[in-house]
Length: 282
Image 1 (cartoon, rainbow, N blue to C red):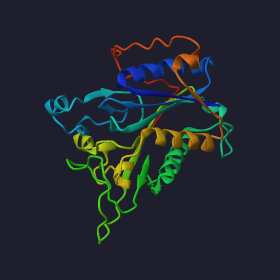
Image 2 (image 1 turned 90 degrees about the horizontal axis):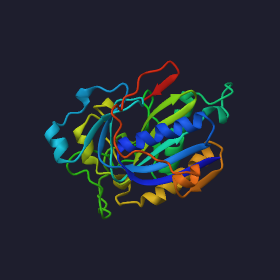
Image 3 (image 1 turned 90 degrees about the vertical axis):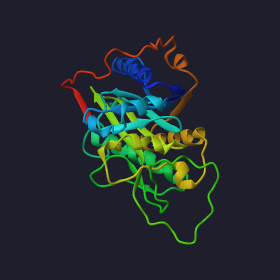
Image 4 (image 1 turned 120 degrees about the vertical axis):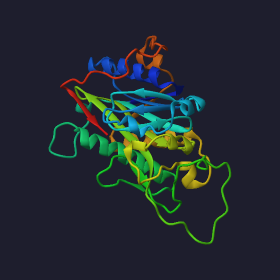
């Protein structure tokens, strides 16, 4: 069974500390598998493989736009999290999920592929064709709307008129994935652009990929979509892809049966030391 908790908006440091707490509880078998769904206040995060040069905006512009820059222990390069983006953090013990291969338990690559499958199915629920791209991680769309970043890439509030000549098809990233696995327990996860202000991605080279733009559900549909609808779709698809029952939990306290006690003060060091039992995937 997967317990799902929607948390609203959290700053990144608080969410990271919460994940660390839940990972410890999951390793000790004090809780079951948990999926956290939330939004972040604007933040640029640098994963284990990140290049600082991929943050291309000067610090004064970042400050002007209210964007934090933090390091973390997930795989991958540089990405952005912010309002209108649905972020999912699965805290799963992979030993509890059967593998489709000869392995007894779910491996890291297969786990990432299942996350991609959840996101592909979710995009399909909103009539957005999405797929994997060979050699890259995440979910991409190429339905002809041509997702872009830039000053005019904000989510539209009204559906634009149809044009006579179709736009050329272009692969654009609609969801990013970066995970951390330690002693079979996962943390971090995925970020699906729903109503995200895509101009924030102009502050970085997203995931270090220079030749492919970023898009969102709102941009692909030409209209905003309630995050609650997307959360319902993602949750349903998690149940299908991971072959698990889903239990919606109102609060973390209800999940744990106690006060969570997550500090609101950012931890002094967001980057953890690499350990032998840690596996990272971008």
